[in-house]
Image (cartoon, rainbow, N blue to C red; front, side, top):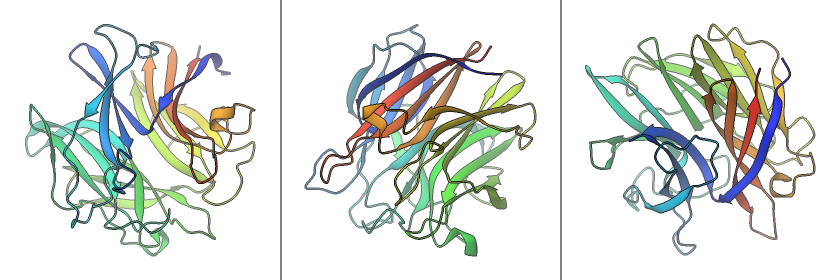
Length: 294
């Protein structure tokens, strides 16, 4: 199957988006460094008009959608690489935003831990402590880029780990009965330069979208967004590249990462970060690619 490219667009400045469907419309949550004097990533929301399909360009950006993290907490640097998920926990359905964070800014290697915000019906409420931290030698003390799926009664987590300035990161996997405790099955599931991995359900099938992005090296033609589909988790065929970082597109010439994928009939719509460095600025953008899968 060779996907047919329908559109690739730069939407707006921002980073680390996740998609959710609520109130007959699509919402997007994204990270923002709102005040350069305060090195903390806050969250903002954007939404489409009611009934609009997810490939629409009619996004309206709203204000801050969650309280800032406390300055003396484990997550004082804010909400990095947020991931939306709904699932059952404690005998009830809950809606959460998982994120990575750290107590202070060092460099891209962290160390990071993972926590979440939970929707209480009117606002996002921060869980006070991290729920997932590095424990294995291959994780090198840091876990980041969480992407979650609730499937078969399990909270499934894919995350970036092994971050180092002189080694290639890997994608790890773990699962939990409630998304908070008892994480088991921790293992490496991707080790070919992947920085992110997100899995979505599409009817009877599952879509795996990954992003390859080197931490310190210059991106090459193999970096970018990749896709595979399977009927069973883990039984992935050889992936197909959807976006190459070095395809000549200016707004993502220096990096592509943090995909968030939605199936719309036979189409796959993927939102992702793009980088175009200018001086000391990473030049972050939110972009979207729309493919027909057949």
